[in-house]
Every structure is written in C-alpha cells, then in structure tokens.
Amino acid sequence: MSAYVEHDFNKSFILDEARVRRIHELINNRVAKFENPPELLLKVFRGDSYVYETPNVSDVLKEDNDDWRAITRLEFIAETEDVFYLKLTFSSRGTFINLVGDDRDAVFLIFSDIREYLHSSVLTRAMIGRDATRMISLLTMFVAMVGLFWSLFSSMLPDPEVSSKALNASDVGEKINYLIEERSRQRFPISMFGWLALMVFATIGAVSGAIEGFWRFLFPGNLFLFGQRKELHDKRRGALSKVFWGVFVGLAVSILAGVLLTWGSEV
Image 1 (spheres, rainbow, N blue to C red):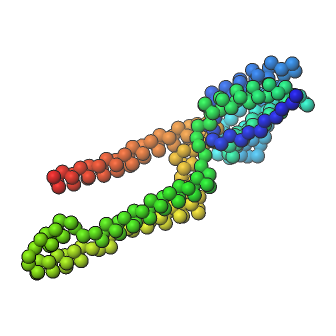
Image 2: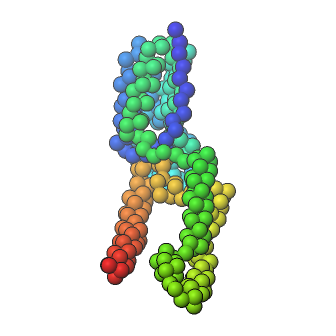
Image 3: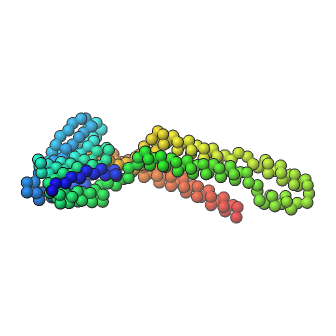
C-alpha cells in the first residue's frame, strides 16, 4: 500500500557543514536498505541563477556561498520511478518535505527520522509572521494606553501628605495656599509623550513590517552557514554581542545605579 507525506516545517533552519553531512548520511542510510536503492542527489540553486545536481556533499560545501553566488535553495532528492520519491527542500521560505512510496512503513520511518533530527538540531529559530507581529503590536499599544492613562491619572492625584496638613490646619490662609500649590503642581506629565510615542511606533511597526524585520535581524534564520556566509555570520554575532553588552546591559546598570542613588538620598 503506497503512502505520501507533505510537511511544511514552521521553524527556520540553520545549515552548516556538519548538519548537511548528517542529513545526507541519514537519508542515504535509509534508502540504501531498499531493494533497488535510489541515488541521493543534492540540487543547488544559487543567486546567480545557476542550478546543478551532484551526489557529492563536498561539491556543495566547497561553494564560496557569497554575494551574488550565494546558495538560495538546497534540495535533497532521491527517486526510483513509480516506487519511491523524496525531496527535502531548504530555502528562504523555510523547510519542506515531500515523500511518496509504495512501502508505507518505509515512508513514515524515513519521515520520522528526518523530522526528529531537524527538530532537534536544524530548526532552531521560531519564524515570526504577520499574525504574530499584529499581536505584538496590539499588546504594545495596550501597555502604552495603560501607561498613558495611569500617568495622567497619577498627575491629577493630590499629594496625601500636603492634603493632610491642609485639612488639619486651622488657618484659612494656609488652606488657600494649599489649593494654589496643588493647582500649580498638577501639570501635563512628560511621561505621556513617551507612551504616545510607543503607541505610534507600535502602529508603524505593524503596518510597515518593521517588527518582522527587527526580529529577523536579531534572530536570523534560514541560513546556509558554510563558505563566506559562515564567516560573515560569526562576525555579525560577535558585533551584536558587543552591542548588547556595551549598550543594553550598560544602560540597565546605569538605570539601576540611578534608582539606588535616588533611593539612598531619600532614605
């Protein structure tokens, strides 16, 4: 009884030399057990519109994989006419597998092996789509609105200490002074501009796709990390690490130090 499997994996991949060799070995070991084992080929698509097929993994890993000649798509293909067909595709759109075979058990066994290895070692990044960016934008806008109303509400609340002193005062002039002081204190809070700006940025990010782009910048996926691409990726990770520790961590430490100093002076 024949069977087929079509599956689109929902995470982005990272393929380096070790992972490519492991996938090739895994598929080759399985199809080698067939009565008429098919030849496993790797089909390479490059940015310069050049396409070729090869049975040797080394031919793929020797690619410069840089600029206009960078690999844009890689397929693992094994086929025996009217008996078995396998195509495992890695591209900028993600990972897709198509399996068809006369032997139902063999089809699902190969699919299970490939899926298990991909999920454990290759598919490392969660892809973010339009629905996710809209949800992030809505949550950000909700937080900004709560912050906006809270800052406005808190600016209108009277100072309880001054209120208590004014209520307990017997002098009418002191009470009038309290009213004047409280009136002058209630100003438009500057923090509201920050919350408004956050709402604007969240809206622009959802409409323009900036949130999606920022996520991919921080957590890139669907990468062929051999040749020049691996060197560029390693340099980029090093630069991002320096930025993170130098800017974000430094900013957090500065804010914490400022809070502690303010708290210490008040105590």
